[in-house]
Length: 446
Image 1: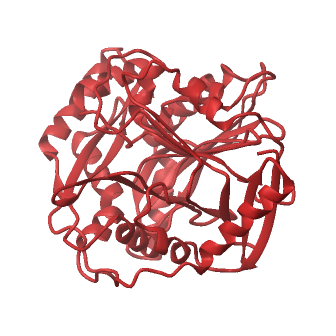
Image 2 (image 1 turned 90 degrees about the horizontal axis):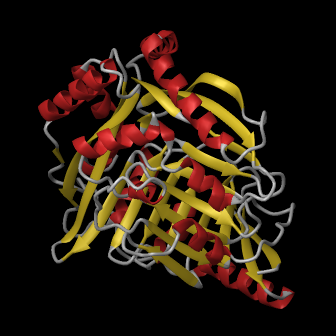
């Protein structure tokens, strides 16, 4: 994959371009929902990696091996110029610290290597076909093949106009409040400082609906910075995540993470909305919750960074989405010489914002209170042939599995529990966070 080639085409909407390949195994879309310049469409990988719990391989080394030798990116092209897309389930963390975590049916790590892709430039309003190969001719051929994806005929079926899921069942709210109270007791007893506890919503897609319908509807109703669709064999992931896990520059080793901690619902009027932002910024509880995770991420990054390189350039910023306001901080670092993206993932996974502090003990507490998470609170990432990386935290995410009756689904929403958490308020926060997914699933199209 030493060579890279680019071909340009007029702007097309990424969701429209993905539609012909909606049912194809390993068809993938990584879409920006604002702020980020680039979105990507990928299909037809040339190699696949699946690491299940009993697999003796080191998953991080296997990922690096799948990427192969490092090859520089062209500075004139998009950030992602071919490489690997990967889904790291939350339980991949059991391969970092052996905690005896239970598992879902999802593998610990699923990866696919793509030598070609379409990059959608939201700023310049054009599409760039990217091809990789061992020669210039091979790279050009792959870029032309990717460009031809734009000419594929769309499916004739129309998107459902009614609900995509007739009944979305929430796990017991009283049980969740009891779990929150249990965690508060552990915090007051000195066992942990914070833990992120989640509850689940489960259901089935209606006959005639599929995961792409959910992805398309979410994209129209509440676009998020890390929207994603990945169709796998018998499974699909639809994510509407607002949170970046890790970003790594292959050129200079710069690292960025942006943990989210602290949430308020949107107001009904501009004045109420402004009050919600002010309340979030003034909340000692939310600031403390955020600061704990900032410190945790600083510690994780310090494991693979030169002394003194970890910085916090942004603390307690507010980011606003369709349903919620979030308190977001920014932590940066620089990858130490001799370290790579596999080392970075090993040092930081799973994301601190969805575990707690101290991380290992918080994960033990979570395992005692929740069923295995699978994709939820794991990460979806792309890893470039040049050593670059970008990744999301898989919150606001629906995991779908196909069986003889169609598609069953699960989504979860959680809250960071600290010493002064109130169980009812934390339960209501989970319901605020799930609202956009719930609306897309259970209400008619708008």
